[in-house]
Structures are given as structure tokens and as C-alpha cells.
Amino acid sequence: MMVLVEEERSIEEGLLELSNQTDASGCRITACVILSTFVAVCGSFSFGVAIGYTSGAEIGIMKDMGLSIAEFSAFASLSTLGATFGALFSGKMAVVLGRRGTMWVSDILCVIGWLCIAFAKNVLWLHFGRISSGIGIGLISYVVPVYIAEITPKHVRGTFTSSNQLLQNSGLAMVFFWGNFISWRKMALLGALPCVIQGIGLFFVPESPRWLAKIGADEELENSLLRLRGRDADISREASEIQVMTKMLERDSKSRFSDLFQRKYRHIIVVGVGLMLIQQFSGSTAVISYASTIFSKAGFSLTIGSTLLGIFMVPKATIGLILVDKWGRRPLLLTSACGMSITCMFIGLAFTLQKMQLLPKLTPVLTFLCVTLYIASYAVGIGCLPWIIMSEIFPMNIKVTAGTLVTLASWSSSSIVTYAFNFLFEWSTQGTFYIFGAIGGAALIFIWLLVPETKGLSLEEIQTSLTRQPNEINRM
Image (cartoon, helix red, strand yellow):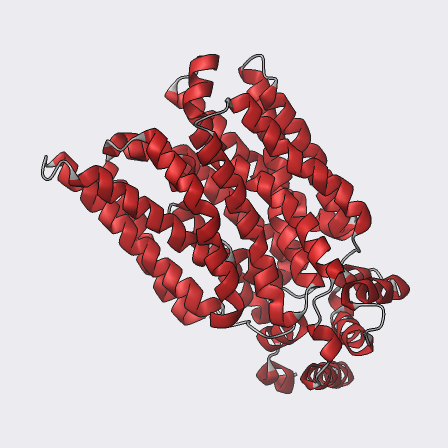
């Protein structure tokens, strides 16, 4: 036992020594990194379309297919239900098939799903299409941020991984803006197009070097790093760092669900799951999916509201993209949670005034402004950073089970919120947003006390610092 502990300690010390050395080649941003990131986030555009599709297509689908509110709520929630199912297999599939292979599977499922919706003859086609595309985005939501985090240099990892959120918002913008001008069937076809582009682009990008290290493909690992860092780059230090970390975790390489309950992983599991629950139960999916319903209830023009939101979506997403590697994860998460909590409280206040028949002209304007600011606050932190942090904090030996658990927590809670929102909204318009606001307030405490800062650190540095337990090692 002591020999094993000393070996583990020496490996950790070697890893930290390697991490402390400067490596200029690790700071280069090559064309291959940019291309690989672009190809990966093409699926994120389809993800964004799927999230906002119900808001832009609600009136058209209910009219053309004769759906009731309950039936449309079921249709909307089937995407998150499918994503929950996809999340169950996302981690394992990313290990067995690789990051690229998993993205190919998600592309096939999404294209099939969008085509079924676009050419739907009855409700069954709609439901099948929504479930199929949902499973696809469940896979995308896990594998895309993981892949980007594993291929990018550490000093720009947050920025590049945030492009996942930028493309999601581009998909949302398309739905909100063009939903006023094109049919719901054409929007479904536009949702499938990025998946086709991604499927083709994956032939031209390298596999994740960390996945290649995990399966013992050392030669392919070096070739992947050379493509990502440049043919003339010295990749020896980065390759050694990855291989040392893989060796350190080798004896625990067969990840089991029970491993997640080990004391050294408790903190990162709580952080990963907690951030995903905050992301969903603070109301983000409900506000984005049912923005049109909220505007209608407040008396604000649906056409104007959706169009302005569509124009606003992409610029506000770039704020987080610019700030994530300058401010860091914690400041952006705290700012985001604070903004979401305050805006939800003001939306609740607006509907309270409406119910009391006070200041009737204020409610529509205040609701629109607060919904817009809420979505902006969400995009800056809570929208993208839980996925970035998830891709950073889990070591390779538990990345499958931990990533699956976290993604499952995200989509199952999203499914609950998406399905329940209409019923909550009918129960109490103002009460619904007061609940969301209170959850946002609780999120501030959670983030302040538990979420670590990962800016500027390599994945190996982050994972070693979060899972090392010197006291336990000494006791052994």
C-alpha cells in the first residue's frame, strides 16, 4: 500500500512539475484548433434551434396540427425527455466511439428527427421527431464541450468552449427572428442543416488527444497534438503531461458508478450536479421555450418581442465569450446568478401589478425588458459555464460516469421544468417567477461557497488539485 501511495505521489509531483514549466507551443492557436471548434459547435446550433423551437413554432403547429395546450406541452417536453435518454449513454458512447464518433451518431439522430418534424403528417411523426432530435442533443450537450476543452490551449479554453453557447444562441436567434416569417416546417429543415455540415466536417478534424491517451494510442496522440499545435511545435511536454495523468488514473480506469461516492470526488460531483440543477430550476429553459407565452400574457406584442429577442441573442452571447478567460468562471457565475434572480423578481412584480390592475402600461414593457436582461444574464454565466466546468473538473477515470450523471441531471430537470411551466404559469404568473428568483438567490450562496476557479489552468492541474487528498495519503 505504501509503495502504491509513494508511486501516486511521485506521479502527481511529476505532473505538477511539468505543469509549472512554460511551453510556448501550448499557447498557439492554430487553424486546426479553430476548424475543429467550428465543426464541433455546428451541432450546438441545432441544439439552440431545438431549445427555442417551441417558442417560434407554437402558434403554427397548434393551428396546423390541431394540438391542445396539454398536447403541445407534451410535444415540447419530449425533446428534453429524449435528451435525458441520450444523456444516459453520452459518457459511455464518448469513450467507446470517441468524441468524433459520438458526434456522428448525434448528427444522424438529429437529422432524422428534424426531417420527421418537417414532413410530419400527424402527431406521431412530431413526437418521434422530437424524441430522436432530443436524444441527439443529449449526446451533443456532453461531447461538444468535452471535445473542445480537450483540444484547446489552456489560456483560451474557456473562450473556445464558450463558443458552444454562442452557436446555441445563434440557433435561438434564428428561431425567434425567422419564426415570424417562415413556417415551422422550414425552421425544422434549418435545424437539420448544421448537423449535415458537422457530419462532413468531422472527417477533417483530429480526435481528442486525451481520449487517444486513454485507449493507449500514443502514436495517434502525438499526431493529433501536432495537428492541433502546429507541425513545427514541440508537443513533448504536453504529451507527457497527458500521459502522466492517464498513468496516474490507470489503476482506476474501469469507472464504476460507485466510484463517484469516493471522498476525493465528492466535491466535484456536488459542483457538477449542483450547477446543472441551478441552470434548469432557475427557469432558463422555461423562459426561452415559452417566451412567446410570457409576452402574450403580459400584453406585449409577440411579433416585436420575438424579433427583438432574435436580434439580441447573438450579441449578448459574445459577452461571455469575451469575458470568460479574462474575468474567470466564478465572477461570471456570480454575476449571472445575481442578474437572473433580480430580473425574475421584477417579472414577478410586473405580473403582480397586472393582477392588481396597477400601472397597466408598465407591465408589458417591464416584462419584455426583464426577460431580455434575464436571458442576457443567463448567457453570461449560468448558460455556458456549467458545461465548461463539467468538461474541466472530472478526471478521465470517472469522466464517463460523472459526465453521464451531470448531463442526466441537466436534462431530467429541464424536462420537468419544460413540462410543468405552463401549469405553474396558469396557477400563478407572478408566483412562478418569484420561485425562479428565489432559486437564483440560493445559487449565489452555492457558487460562492463551492465552485472552484479554473481559469488559466490545464485540465491535469485542475483535476489533480481538486482530487488530491494529502491527509488521506498520509493516513494510508
